[in-house]
Structure formats: C-alpha cells, structure tokens
Image (cartoon, rainbow, N blue to C red; front, side):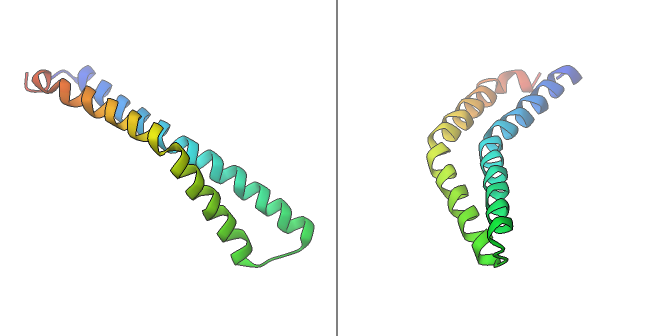
Length: 89
C-alpha cells in the first residue's frame, strides 16, 4: 500500500464524515442564531427556551436526513469493503 493510497483513503473518510455532519451542523447553527435573536428581542434569558427548540430542530433534521445519511454511509462502506484486495498488497 502506497502513501498516496493511504492518503486517499483518509481523505475519503474525512470527506464522508464532513458531508454526514454538515446538514446537522448547519441547521444547528441557524437555529442557534435564530433562537438567540428571539431571546435578544424578547429579553427572555431562560436556558430551557434556548435548549429545547434547538434540540427539537436538530432531531427533526436528523430524522429527515437519516435516509440520505445512511445511503451515503452505505456507499462509502461498499467502496471501502470492495477494495479489500488492494489493501493487502
């Protein structure tokens, strides 16, 4: 196994992890900003007010994007396991 091959495997693993986490992180960021703006406008400083909606949005995004995430993870796993013969060389 050449160093370039190992770098390619690590790059694919990191890019897959990035694409799997990107929708959740983006929605969590937008929800956090929106909830913070609502808190600033209404002067509500309750921690439950900021935590519960953020978790609800995060959970809804996770449930909606789960089929896409599973498809992406399955295709990556098939790609890695399909090349097992090349790893031994």
